[in-house]
Image (cartoon, rainbow, N blue to C red; front, side):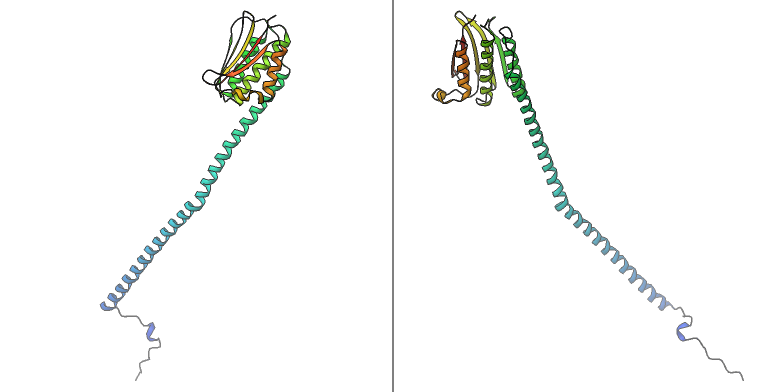
Length: 236
């Protein structure tokens, strides 16, 4: 009699017998795992979105603000540099004009043209309204008188711009029956008569030049505003 050989394979390695109950249990477990996976996926996406929003907020509140502040600083520095450059250019132009003025060649016949150029340059540099009017053909005595008249006009014009804050300047040059006249009128601050004796070197130099030209100098307040400087001199 042949004895049946015992199964040498463990119970766990035997082929599982599929039953409806087992299949249902596996499907239920698979469904639960799928729901967990989808829930985890949604949680990860939500967390990723929150992290992105937080990073964006941090960048906006820190880096972007710093960059904006830096851009404003750069714009302000650029504007300041433009102002400094304009000041340097004006100083250079003024230095050149002073150097030319110290050695200006003014003759009796050239004086009207030089006075007209003075008004043109002043208008361009200070953006003011400057006009020159020649009343009639004036024959001054000599080069020294012409030079003195030019520097009187220049000093009065400079004072009108720097001290009087004038926007309109007029120079009239002509002659009347007994002599010639040079009148510089502006619409700036009114001249204060009680302070005329305490004015600086500018007024004293104009007086000296007028007397050297055998003339006289008057400085008075305008009818409505500004200051009127007049020099009256003898003709040749």
